[in-house]
Image (cartoon, rainbow, N blue to C red; front, side, top):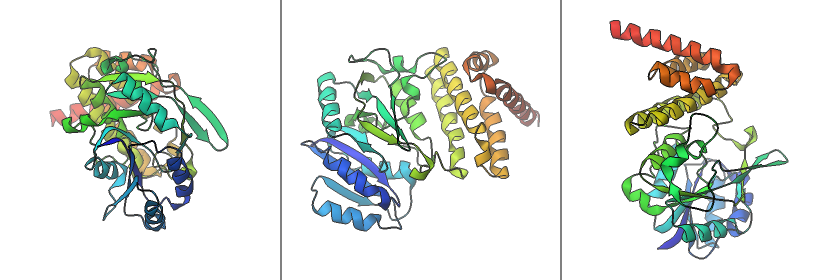
Length: 328
């Protein structure tokens, strides 16, 4: 058994591989294995990875015969897990030397089901430290505590797979599998499931992961298209999970998250062609129409002020639509 498996989905990313491989070489402690899944790339990615694997025994390259997306590629690697811990990386990012070893040391020491950490956001030449949103650090606590209240950012909405390590035994409970129908935002319900599953969590200060956030990275989040709208079914799942928890505070938190992400994407809707804009508004209206008025009012109170009128209007449209469907 390995000490840790690092899951990395890759598609048409040859231009990022030199930096990624340098980061891999600087973060390969004893017992580490990289499971890199080439998701049917059409560029030089397969050749570069094959060459790299010849001199790196801890690099295992898997390949899909058709594009399955980041969620599907991660699932391919998760089926091959054979480690105490698992973490994730994106091919266009990198880590400081020794980052993974430091994370493993704290994970072994604390023994929580997930150990989260800070990171550094990279925007062009800027380096912006980002702190994992948790008041308790260096101690183990019930992961449900990380869901938090109706405002601000909390751990459940810190959706960065690479910002921490996870107990690989969670895979046997079905908690590490990603929904392949979600081309983007599959990490949102993934984290909610983890936090609601009776797991434990810890947060440690280790800002050694550098997250490249810009359009040139090729991220589906940054490059508008039909996949962008997958945040809507992702938050349908989040609201379902919160409803199933039976906790009113969780329902408010989930609706608050839905409000924030709808506000974010409608605030940048000029990226989308007109047909996708209309589809986003229609589907967002149905998403925000869910739940009771008190839950929505509590969530809206903490939503971005500039978007509250829009969000309330979308809910009214959605409620009229659902009422009309029930009447017919």
